[in-house]
Length: 235
Image 1 (cartoon, rainbow, N blue to C red):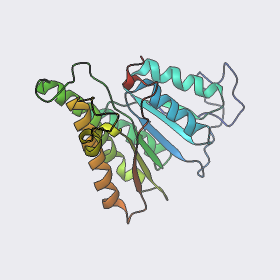
Image 2: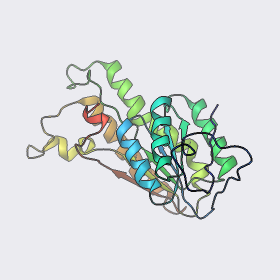
Image 3: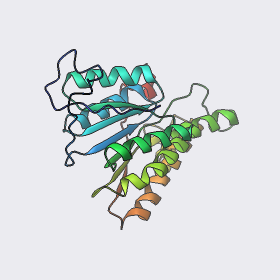
Image 4: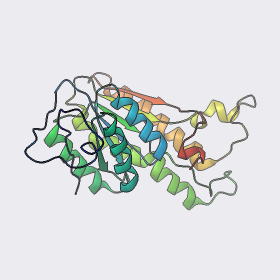
């Protein structure tokens, strides 16, 4: 069961920041604070995005399938005074998403920002002439369909925000121009599963932005480039 523990409005210490607070301590939530959900499988990228968002004073929910990593990341953020909570999310399992939606609705009543960073690298990925079909399907499930299902189920909460935002973490590998140009740094990287799933994510971003443009929600994609994240095999 997903439980979102609200941090009390006190100066955290090494001990109080990482454990459940007594029921007698009043939980404080300021409606002016943004509620941000960072959902994804990449350990380093999701953690860093959540940390940077939390430093702005937002209420950060770090959603991942890895409970041990998520709880550890949240504990570290709380030690720095960030209002962070871990929520168990697996984009391939809709029941985990539905439970998180119920929790966010009950506590905050809305979601202001959704960041999808579910991208993975698969060592079995490869060129279109030889990569196995099941490998491409697996990559699409995690890189594209997880983001699509998470966005769709969170949309009603985003619509309750005065300025909802969706950010999909993609990459230049999903751009047709990058894959075609001989001058591009990615020319030699022919990994069908990753590139095609990023291209699909880019299309989701463009079409969703058009669909929601009159509803006050902005949708964008962002690329981290080659950096020290799990996707770049820095694990």
